[in-house]
Image 1 (tube, one colour):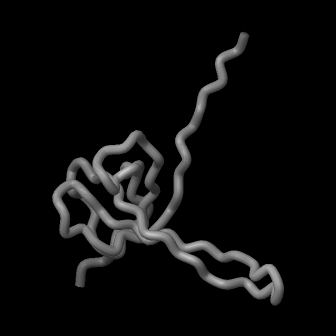
Image 2: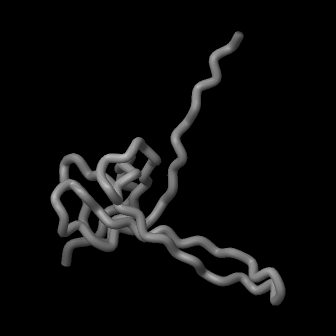
Length: 88
C-alpha cells in the first residue's frame, strides 16, 4: 500500500486587520459566474488566521492554510507572506 500524503488547503488573500495578538484577518476574493446572467461577479470571505510571530501588516498579501481549530473563530494559520506593503 502506498502512502498518500495529504496537503492542507491553502488560499491567498490580503491582510485587512492585524490589531489582535497573534491573529490576522484575511480577505479572500474570488470571481464566480452568475447562473442566469453569466456575468462574473466578485465574492469575498474573511478568515481569521494565526500569525505566531505577529509579522504581518495591513495590506500584505499572504497564503494561509487550513489547520485544526485554534480558537472559536480561527481555523487557518499563516503559511507565508507573498508581498509586503511599502512603508511611506
